[in-house]
Amino acid sequence: MTEPLKLALVGHTNVGKTSLLRTLTRDVGFGEVSPRASTTRHVEGARLSVDGAPQLELYDTPGLEDAIALLDYLERLDRPGERLDGPARLERFLAGSEARQRYEQEAKVLRQLLASDAGLYVIDVREPVLAKYRDELEVLSMCGRPLLPVLNFVASDNHREGEWREALARLGLHALVAFDSVAPPEDGERRLYESLALMIERARPQLERLIDDHEAQRQARRQTGQRLIAELLIDCAACRRSVAAQSQLEQQAMFELRDAIRQREQRCVEALLRLYAFRPDDAHASDLPLLDGRWGDDLFNPETLRQLGIKVGGGMAAGAATGVGVDLLVGGLTLGAAAAVGAVIGGTAQTLRNYGQRLKSKLKGQRELTVDDAVLRLLALRQQQLLAALDSRGHAAMEAITLSAPQEALWRQGRLPTALSMARAHPEWSSLNPHSRLQDAERTEQLEQLRTELAALRPATESSKK
Image (cartoon, rainbow, N blue to C red; front, side, top):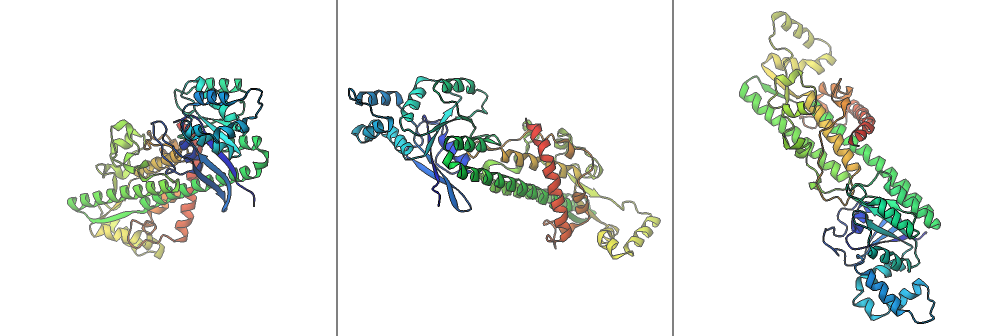
């Protein structure tokens, strides 16, 4: 069995080593992330496996705090005429008392790097290039291990990436990786592992397995996320409530339907967060979108829909106050219309199943409440944006997700997908209705078709973010 590649994450204190490890392992609970210095005091490890076989071991180390003084001390330890190489010089230092006292933190870092196959030297590129960083690299280079600089926080507006690239080149470090543990680039892990494979050729098979596995996992997460959104939309499109045609009863039923849709969307949000291994508090349905705080969390506010540019019409006029469409298909029946309805009810079994019971209810003074198309559009927009945000979010992110108004034009105009139109005629497709049949073969087929359409919309959604 091949031994896993051992990597030590090293660097100055508070540059994001733990944050980077959280993102690489997709573990929001690993270690402690804090803006205060010297948060990590001990070496902590994590393992990445493929099909149960360990491929990579990552070790988070304490921050280097006083490399300038340590370098001076190491130089004073040298004896006249002595020509020890770097590892030998460090072994002598580590065996001394100062490694257990003044330079205890630095000693922990050096021991771990000496015990590893390579190191990732993490740099906060928001910081200026100072002499202490050059001294850190000189001390770390004595370990005789390959060092790959990782430029962290490159997505920040105030980064100094250019200055750091130039400074590293002057030190002979031309191979490096630009990353961001809060908002990692889509190909960030691939480039990191490919750079390591160039530096440690024997580890190439393990690193390539990790690359392939992570890409497969990412695709699987996206597909599962699209299916969760499709399930939400089918559930809401097929949802209906029958209520007596009395104003007070209608209003109560509208509020109940609105709350049921809100809760259903929240369950979708929670499922997406679990899928991407984020915290429950990282996003809430009530926060999407904020719209600069003008309309807050009211999914059903018609003005919110107008602000988003969603076409409002049809049943929305009847239920604008709550965002619920009231289907008045047989309002104002004449004798001729009633006869026509009777003909429908007396028709084929298929017709009766799809329309007969609904029309019978209307003739008895019942009204059916359904979720308006505009609300379905907004649900689709919000959840697609959330999925895109989760897909590009690093597990070191501490702030809750906030999204701007969705801009996907395809969901804002034209017809809704066929699957949702069909769901309107199939209340048994919704888990929000009694006597639902969620394993119905036709529902499953339409669900997959809708998932495919959601997947096709993803590139346009991403381009709107850039």
